Image 1 (cartoon, rainbow, N blue to C red):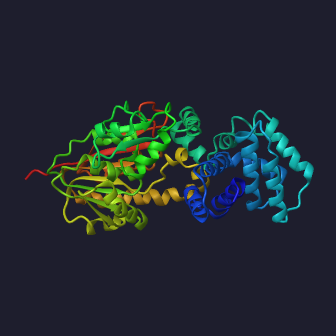
Image 2 (image 1 turned 180 degrees about the horizontal axis):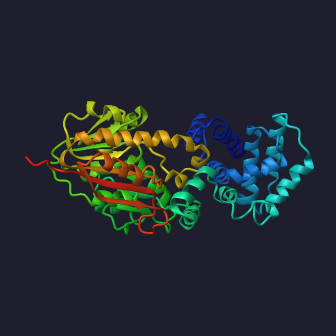
Image 3 (image 1 turned 180 degrees about the vertical axis):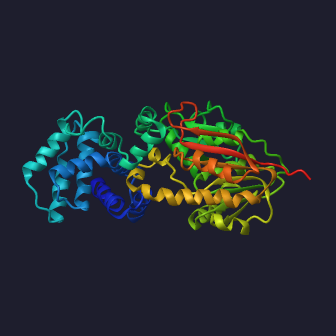
Length: 431
């Protein structure tokens, strides 16, 4: 398939059938052989279309209101190419592709309307129509490609100024951080192996990010990840783990359902622990992925289980000193990392997620020793999932006290991530 045709098939799956960006591309790339250059071109086209989905869709609705979802996907490609990817080049190929697609889909349209839309994309300095009030929620929705309920929620909980800062940050590219898997090689060996493709000035031991000045950085990053020499992380998570003084004799358990690097970072940090770390996954897919990769990462100090919060007790035989909780949540960090997250996010699932988070805290409480701690950590900026939920938990559990909590926002230059954490200590009972 040509890049436009493959991109079209991917968008039909993502937009029309609710398939994720990564799975849609993975499936298509497995059906036919593509070069690395072709894969990158297709990913860029699809990613650009998704990152401007709401405004593209609004403009299509104005010019072709009766167009079905699959035909719209061809227009998303056209608009991405004309406006962003090939703005000053020859767009005849993509125009011909869209017209042929409409013909195959038996769509009747007026040629002049088609030309007017293409001209609008090429010549209008601002894509958002002038009749949309710049102070309105709708304008933010189109400008930053965010669902309207999310825009309203963030403005209400964070205040308009902070929310606007967030909107801007969420529309920019993100620096990805990685932790060196010290179960396979130490930092000195890593530097010798990968040279200066990575930067080491993160302020956190064994955390790196690809050097923007080296063209081989992306290649070396992929090589390091495939060889399990690296895994992705956030500076916020590493800061939380740095603040803890876990001893070799301490017992540790973790629910790792929303922060993939949590159990990997624990494995590298607690490799000399005298006890096995019990790690619980809420989904069979996450459990399977972890067990499949355990040998590749060199993990020997963990036991993996799959269970819902209501059945933690079946995995943990006795109370532990530290229980790390990262239950399923809204994972707002994915708004910056996944081009289709805004499209697939359903705000009405928040209540169910919050209930699941609440239950994970309730079920973990009796499984922590007196003098032990719960470390609740989730990649979100929702107060309902963070501060409010923890506050409610503490009101109902006098045996726990708040040691520390923090909310990292992407606008924080030092940590640059969406992450809430709370450290809760269980008081000792005098005998």
